[in-house]
Structure formats: structure tokens, C-alpha cells
Image (cartoon, rainbow, N blue to C red; front, side, top):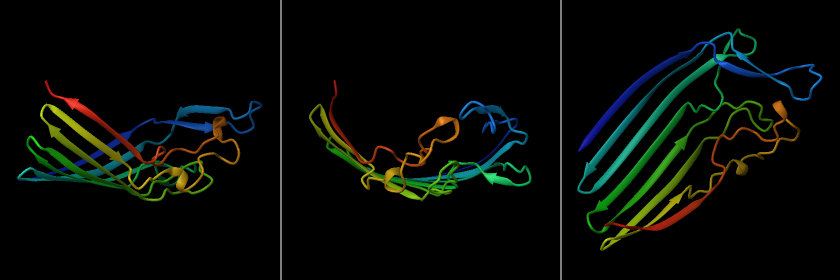
Length: 192
């Protein structure tokens, strides 16, 4: 009833693409796309555990990622933006055949380095909670799914709009968490 899985990974991307703003250009917000001089490096590990017993199951995952690139001074390496160092997920499900199922999911995302964000240089960690309930009535399955019950949204931390136009003429920051907030959906499935 117990399954364990571990994965180690690493990659080196040589000549990665970078976008920089052209300083002193006669055109407003002109950008230059070029290859970076130094590679981007990523290493990490993922662990997965799954337990099953009498219609119940719990799956847990943990991911550690270390992604770095050279900073603009080319003397030091910096964390790659929008890559959380830690992420954890737990999904629990109980299913009774011909009756239905009930599930709960929790997803934690750790801090991420941010670029071009005037409100913060590092994101806040956050937790997303959801559930699923499904009931079988003969050949019909009624279901209700809820995502992001805590209503985590980036706008609850900081504004999305920049106070002044950013690089390339952008008016918004990069998205580092949910934008849509709490979501519910339901429906009917018919088995033939």
C-alpha cells in the first residue's frame, strides 16, 4: 500500500536567451533579445509518496529546485526569477465504489525571486486548498469541485499594475501566484 519515488535532476542551458532594455534609445522602451554570456544551471530533487488502503489514498510530493544564472555584473550567480525553491503538495482521496468519492488537496509554494517588481524582490509563500465531492446515482455522477478556497490572489499582496510603465512598455508585474482567486465548478457525468 506504500509507494515511494525519488528523482534527482540537473541541467545546464548554454547560451540562454535574455531580454534587456536598450538604454539611451531614441525609441521608448526598446528591448534587445540576445544570448546570455554564461549558462543557466538548474539542480533539484523531487520526492513522491503514495499510500493506499481500503478506498483511501494520500499522495504527497516535495520538490526542491535550485536554478541560477549570472547576475548582470557577471561576477556572481543569482537565483532565477519565478522559480520557487520549495513546493509541497498533498492530495487525499476516499472513494467508495458505486457511491462516490471525496477529496482534499493542499499545495504550498515557497518564496520566489522577482524581477522588475517595485513592490517586492521576493514573493510571499502561499497555500492553495481545494476539494472534490462526487456522488453516484445510478449511471449519473454529480460532482462539485472547488479550487483555491483561501482565495489566494496576487492582488491581495500587491497591485498588478506598475506605478510607471516598465521595460518594453509593460503595465503589469509578472504573475507569481494565482490571479483568478476562488473557483467553483460542478456538473453531471453520464455513464453509458
